[in-house]
Length: 87
Image (cartoon, rainbow, N blue to C red; front, top):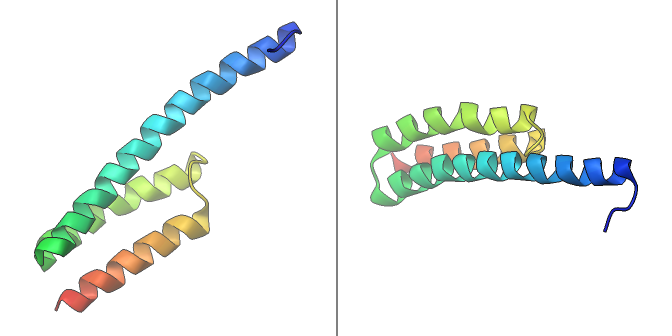
């Protein structure tokens, strides 16, 4: 357990930041799940719309430090290629 006042404050800040990041990550996963479900159903237009909605959320996660830039780009790229294959 943290002993110094500074360490106690850092522990509080970490808890608050963890909660914010957890909520943000959960929100992004929800958007990604909607894209996955649209791909699974075979509905190309719905999948494209879902990806267009998910993309800014993912990139916002990058700016907020939840995801690495390359991770988000890789996810978008792979989803886009799977949607393209639906034809």
